[in-house]
Amino acid sequence: MTAIVVTPLARMAEMAVKHRTREMVSLLAQGQQFHRPAVIDKARHLILGMNDITFAGTANLVAPQESHVEQIIDFARVWDQSAPVLIHCWMGISRSPAAALITVLALHPDQDDAVLANRLRQVSRYVTPNARLVEIGDHMLGRGGRLVAAVRAIGRGADTDGNVPFVLPLRPSDDVASN
Image 1 (cartoon, rainbow, N blue to C red):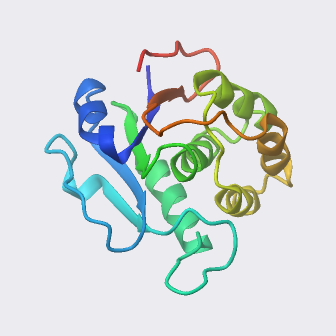
Image 2: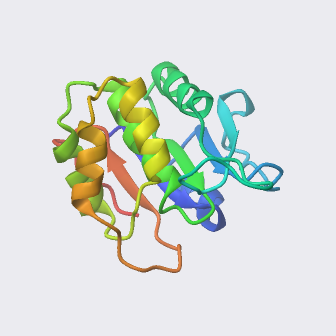
Image 3: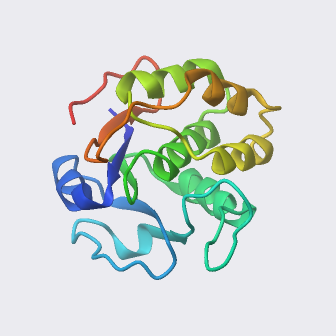
């Protein structure tokens, strides 16, 4: 099964090894330090510096930008899909799930946004995808507001300590792998 592994930073290495990922997207605050797992190809590791905010940056905070989403889309489109890709952020519940939705739709634009958002909710009751990333992704992928509406429809996720990695299949028919 080709899929996206979404995880918090604290479980990134464990999930990379468990799911045999070789490619990774990191969405963390600029300058946040971490070690890339050895199983991840350095050339296939996208690092995006942004904060988990939904408004234009204030003070030292960096809001998600079109350039960030463009890089996610470009990264997704050259992913060979021979192994799952790992996407992580600090808690694994906001920026990385939004990036996972963008990745799926960049690869499979024929998917229904509501079905995709509901599938995301089925694999994780905790996610609350970053609204700014979703809005930018919706616009850049020509979704006409459908992705934004679908994410709003699934609502805010349940409270969590952020220790809840999950796997999002690329297609509805793919089996959901265990975390």
